[in-house]
Length: 165
Image (tube, rainbow, N blue to C red; front, side):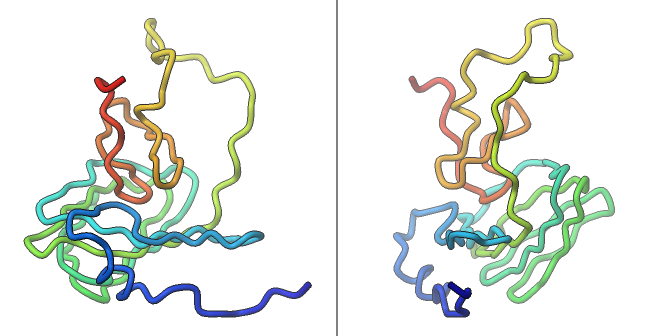
């Protein structure tokens, strides 16, 4: 059956209907057979997505509302509605939501699924903890690269607290 172009969501409507305290992904592309991933993400005022790097995929970030700042190795860039930012793979960046919060869309090629296999040897003698669930995003399923990450670098959702069991 051929693919059919269609409207998937009114992102302004999603934002308007979301509870005021809801942060993270308010919408994500979930169509079967897609070649893209996309997320509409809201960060509350003053929230930060700490420094991180995407090693595999380029990401397009488009500000839908609010304001904020993107920090990169090249400097800081103010983010306002309708700003489009290309985040090339391997670039380091951090996001800071301004006083109005930050609402943005990210789009990138679909990430290949995880496979079962042996992990690369750890550089640390202690290695990784036996359970990494505190580093898995409940919204999009991404595993945080940094062991001390507090927010998902893909969609901005707060990661589970490691101390909660």
